[in-house]
Image 1 (cartoon, rainbow, N blue to C red):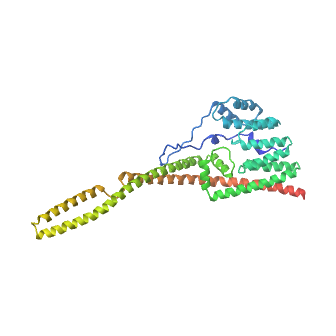
Image 2 (image 1 turned 90 degrees about the horizontal axis):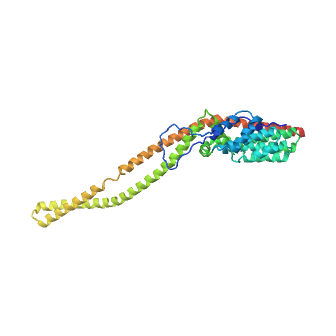
Length: 396
């Protein structure tokens, strides 16, 4: 009888604490400082019931745990119950399968939320329950359904290989061969996705800032979760920095739009003033020339009263022109706008620096985790290929 790793994993310890921690959140109304700062982990509220359940899930499964598991799901009122309750049901189902009670196991598994981090294990256990009941077709359908819905999940693809091995050992070659082929296809697709991700890490940055720690369907999501679980990678800190920097970037973009509008308004006013300044300067030049001509004439006819009156009028007009030109000021940005522009440039430079540092940390974590996941899928493909070869050899 097959003892699948997904069954053993379901009744083994479960590292939940990292998955329960939100990656961080930013208030849209605030515009945080762009200066780098130490980002603290989000606080997590753990009730007494939660602590008791987490302690239980951290130990090997025994029949004595069933009452505590049932009590938690029936009576606990913790805010973490939507997540932890699914793991309690998963443990109950695994215990039931261990005792051969497939009906109770399926009843528990049917209550596990489809978007829960436990959904893959729940679906695998459901397939295992049908296999144990001798319903090979329904079990096979579930294994294929799991791989289709969670193509990037290692346990889902591994479940295909294990199902193929079990059916091959039982002589059900017609069921085993297509499952092996599907496992080979999924492993190849995931290896290709990992290779693409290695060449285009920008996809990973977007996934990190958008993924909620929980269920996942793609190999990229699996890689993110592996990086998050690696305490040495500091990827959680880098992720929070990425999220903070993206939020700061959006805020700075809004401020830049406001500044642009203010500058446009000031520029429009300057254009109006500029047209007057140009006309006034031309008039000033003509008036200065008029004064010079009158002064030259008056040197030869100092008693010409009419010319003296014209000269006085020209000088008054020149004085008024100079006064208006002086009030217009220069064409440079007003000091307040220039200060805002300079400050915005400095903050944008700091945000870009923060983004660069966070991305460097993520790339470092990626380089550490990528080979491990690639090796897993290569080994999985090798196991599927070996099982398929043994099938074909037996046929020949």
